Image 1: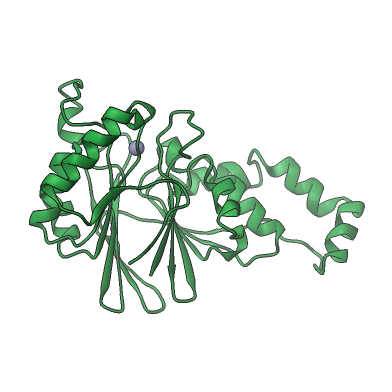
Image 2: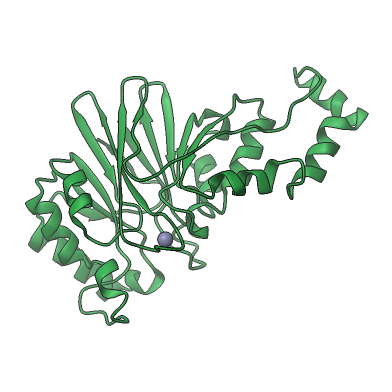
Length: 282
Ligand SMILES: [Zn+2]
């Protein structure tokens, strides 16, 4: 498996880091985890195309994990790609209909593109046939514990504490050819996640707060620090640890250095803070 980081940031407007998005190549499948703002552009920067993506899995539906969803689906459709398989918690069906349904916010655009004669001629000149169907992502709403069998890979999931009860929030593990990749989503440490990351070859874990950084008491249990994440990962037998979802202030030189020091101290050498467009072999 190959991981490409398409967005390692947060909702904050930050040129260095797009919002969350991670591409996992597994055999012939191209799986995208989350699709926050800026992910679309970084996909192109990585030399990839929207229509290459075969599956999208949403960890949860905070805006910074889905803001480029419509753009990606629309572009894949425009390229003539096959419908993308989309998996996410409720309300991903409502959101998809809200974009691409008969009364969706893109319905006026889609009517123009598929019904106007000049647009139809452009479509035919590009090799298309009529009638031209609308984008139709194949959406499945999922709940924690959901599993999926891909071609040569298997995905498992668990619930993680983050934005409940407003949003269902999940972590995902993918196993293929004896290797295991885990994406925490936005997550507090919990028993289910610790079980999911056990013996992972690569753990991609969100980090929203540095060691020693104050936060509201309600935030503390759901925003583990680099030291806390490193300790849990180490004791769970994780082989390689990558931190992501960094905020602007966490990239200040002293904060970044402190996070790296915590990783080295509590996990060891095989750990780092990712940057957009990084690639890792799992
Ligand atoms: Zn979130």
